[in-house]
Length: 143
Image (cartoon, rainbow, N blue to C red; front, side):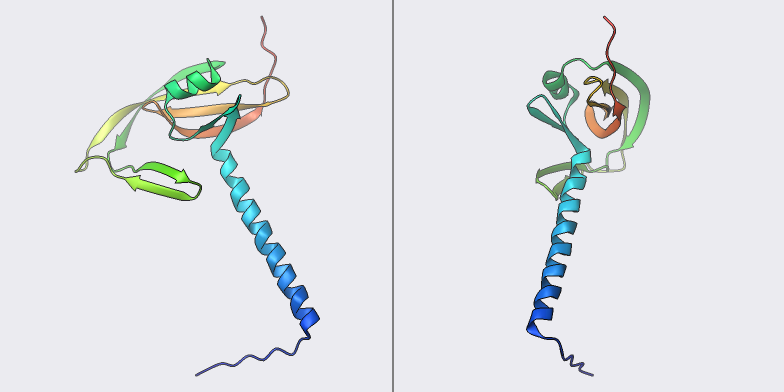
């Protein structure tokens, strides 16, 4: 059964509806793009993002205010390694054949950028950054 829709609106009303839907769509795109900022932050002039190594982050940001080893965890070799050169495009690869597990060290860094900036908590698994959290405003360090 074919459905036929007729539009009984004037061209001015159709233009208003088109402008409203276009503005709603652009707002949605802006919100989606801004949500990706939680996975990265700026340290000086460089960007720190997930999947970077501890050594790279230490080189960019320096020594963290707090560094703790949280213990070890078993991770499956089937956990995909996420690599993406473009926002929203991830290439996944699965290292090695078989259901293997490996033990990885869990490390936490906390960077304090001062009382007027937000502190960041970084969680590493096996030396690779897997999580970035904002944990409130920093503090003045006692000297």
